[in-house]
Length: 256
Image 1 (tube, rainbow, N blue to C red):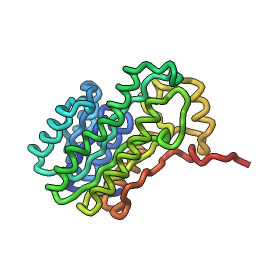
Image 2 (image 1 turned 60 degrees about the vertical axis):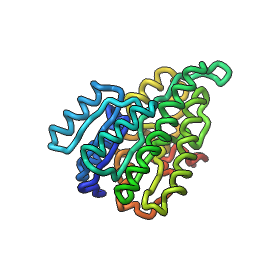
Image 3 (image 1 turned 135 degrees about the horizontal axis):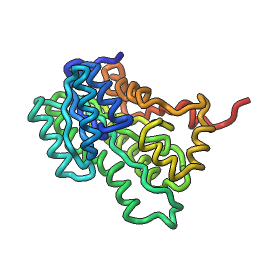
């Protein structure tokens, strides 16, 4: 397992799914993890899981779409641990499913605020903290929707394409300062968020499952392992990339 021994790590969206599994994976790898989310009940559950394993873990209620909340959370990490080594900007929502002409403007704005603006805000405050700490690694959660155009999910796809672009710009700007910035693009993953999206968009859910060559969705732990690798020194020469972890979903073509 990749090591994050004695590293200080921030994880957003830590209340469930990929965020929870990644936060626990980082802590098991030796890091002091600070988890954030709006879901206080889910955060408490993540914290209880970490405590049951004796892991070094702290949680904070944070709205990642608000600059004041993200700045406060980053300041809390620095005040508590004195440094920041790794950030996993993972919080996200799918939004509702509509054709573009029917998509509610407020819903569109909300998806971009949670999925894209939050990544910008995270890096805005994380990068100066990492510069003071002597470098670090940032991993942003994109999606296979950053490569495709899933019908009915215009806001989600736009936000995840944006995460890919932001990641590449941040990587270019910060590589020489010892800060590696990469993205992870999960495919169909068995999380509460995906389950909720399946109920509102069942045709997409069926297509996604049949299009995956391995014939199953990912366990969140499989995505967490990939995020852990990107955040660790094992990926020391990986910069500005989007690692697709999708069971072959975006290969295209067909099976003979």
